[in-house]
Length: 206
Image (cartoon, rainbow, N blue to C red):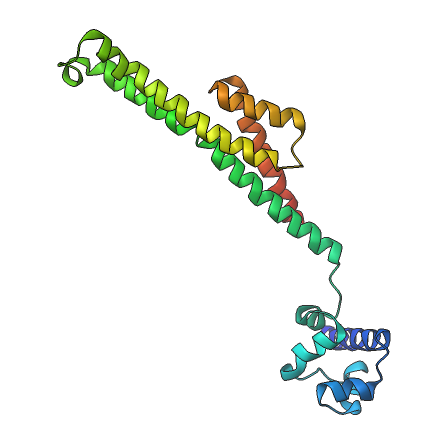
């Protein structure tokens, strides 16, 4: 029963689109290299078009092969929304990953400082006090600050192009990236995660 209903559904779609384009059954058959009787059989639900002409038939009717096989036209607004959600999700994902990179230089700097303090005599036995302080504490923090500034600049460029992120959030993200890690940084980090989860749910819902 379902197969029969589907055949009629496909036939009705072919008939509707053919009439919309002002084509007779004979003319459609001529374009596809089949007889008008074959077209009539499709439209009356007595058979399917041959697979060898599905692509040509879909092109003539102005639809996709998938729509032809389903017997219905997919809502273009829904398709556009799906595409936009996918683009938005991927953009948020990249932004979150880039934002997370800010943790790496900070963590590495903390490890560097911890090792310097723990193994001071082994690592800096030939250094005087000031060079030991510079290499053990100042240098890792300096490298960390430079790395975060570079990453922050790249993030600032990215979010400048995003119209879906409010101005206040853009300003906060830029400021936090240059000020370093703290509670505002973590707040924005969780904001980006929540935003990403919402985008993911929108994709699943569609």
